[in-house]
Image (cartoon, rainbow, N blue to C red; front, side, top):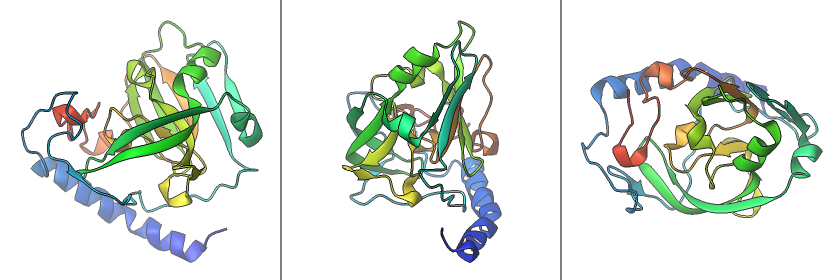
Length: 222
């Protein structure tokens, strides 16, 4: 287990972090007014980095593989409830995609391994009234997205990055990867995928961030 004192210090920083991001949203920080085409690899207002900056809510949950599980529920015909071995037993899926963070950095060519969203959809079978997805995380974070954005060929629940297990600070043991949206939509430490009929804002969406978060439309804030 990690040092609980370190986690306490991180948790204490959370209100300041949220207040700062709310101020960014009010001020429209980082907005350029640009609009990029999907064919352009770097969205407007973004700059390229080679490292992978660590961003979180001040809490780093440590979930061992033996204790981890993920639930897929809500408006589905078949509820899924996988422990680690069951998750790894699903058909493997790999993809290479780019990261676009709302704080204006992008990182190209990230290799992900995990379970594809379309495999999850095929098993869970969302009901006709399901229109949105909400990710729930072990740090109590949530984020929402249209079902149409989840049902894409590059979306997955990833357990590995660049051929190695996802480190804790980047969302390990598993995180969502939704490459076509800003990266706050790719929730870390995912434990539940909920299908719902009506849109429900998640954590950052309730604190001034855009409901959808398309980087090429520069949808940083609501």
